[in-house]
Length: 96
Image (cartoon, rainbow, N blue to C red):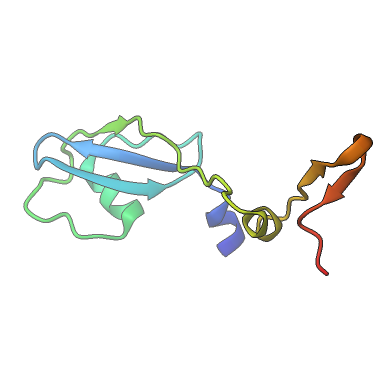
């Protein structure tokens, strides 16, 4: 169950009625149109906002992680090769 939930995309929904944005996970094919559906997916209370209040999906930038050190590459599961003298490559992420 946890693996399936982690594999789902994350979406942000904005409700103009209460000026709130909530982040939820659901499948790509699922359509979310009301505040009640968003609150059900986010497992939160409706508050004073009616359940049938329309919401809109907000486009947001994805979170990216950019490695800045050799250990960051290694921890992410990548190998970093650096070209040394005469075309010889050295694995700078290898364990000693």
